[in-house]
Amino acid sequence: MNKIYQKALECLGLDMSTKEDEYGCAEAVNKIFKLATGREVGGDISTYRMYLSLRKDDDFIQSPYNLPGDIIISPTGFGKGNGHVGIVSENNKIMSNNSANSLWEENYTIDEWRNKFKDFPILFYRYRTDEVKIIEQKKINILEAIVVAYQKIISLLLKK
Image (tube, rainbow, N blue to C red):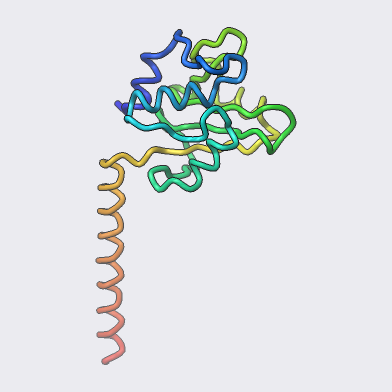
């Protein structure tokens, strides 16, 4: 099980935003992420700054689909009102800070998020753990081997 997802589950029902209650989503994600990995995502309590951090940090990759433990973010500054950030759960659900009671909850589905934040970008970011980096490197090695094989084939065909 993904350690970010696991830690997010363990925090359900807890107040993970001690600095900012009403708009504590980024603070909560940073705190949970730090408990799971030893580091924060970045951006302090701002979804916009967190988005900028995710974009430039090589330890995160933007994903066109979501898996449990991925960060979903709709940053402030791109639509009317405030953005939001959470962590993807199972069964198309999302865990995030509930501004009404300051608790970390499984409080959205993907469809509800898309509807509520339709004027914002809706982006998924995956933390590149060592396991993911190893798998990516293996894929690169395989692709490189395929390119070399094609180059040899083309070279042989040109000699004939």
